[in-house]
Image (cartoon, rainbow, N blue to C red; front, side, top):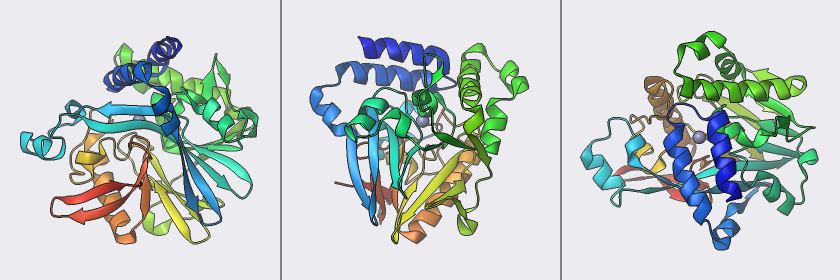
Length: 310
Ligand SMILES: [Zn+2]
């Protein structure tokens, strides 16, 4: 009951274009969530001498109706049951003695999952955002206050410029304007902790913070950013929402979803980054990749596919 109420609040505060359907899906999943599934919310991935931890806000079901222009053949081939696995994921990086979050999910389980890892909300040192959609910034605020009082917040310049642009906000239907209000509340609450940066091209990446590089991947949102985490020669690429619907968009990066603000640019970024990832053979993690939220890209007769880690 409580979760349903939080969900309704989140929708009111933070939802934007296309978010409604995702939110209502997660509502039904969240209320039906069993204790068993809650156990599936944390996953430890070893990275060099440290680890990256999946802290999930819950599993979800992807509905192919969010895909724009996917043919019936493609849907039949890649989503034969009509539903695909999805999730709301947050990743905790333990790097150089710091606790660093990548995104904050909806805010359902983040603080309790951190506590299970022995980390209080005051011990989160940094949050790196991939973008400012409500299902990625929802865990940053509670009752109008910031949840992580000591966290430095990293967001791409372009992303903040978009969500704080009152002219763009005023030009959109009311339902979409709420997403702007949510993003602006975060920028205001963390204003003394804000680090704005310019993400880079994959070939020219430099470190944003020790052990983490940022990669420009615009289109899903105007400043969408992916992150490459490195420790002791091991790497993990966090693609955020570059891919929303992995079962279809990994083999077919040209297909956008209704969640992409600029569908054409999003498709370009997806193709470009996926090509590069395949050439590098990197393990990937995504915010809407089902448990454990990570996998390896393999090329099969059907094209590129994501094999989830066991
Ligand atoms: Zn998302």
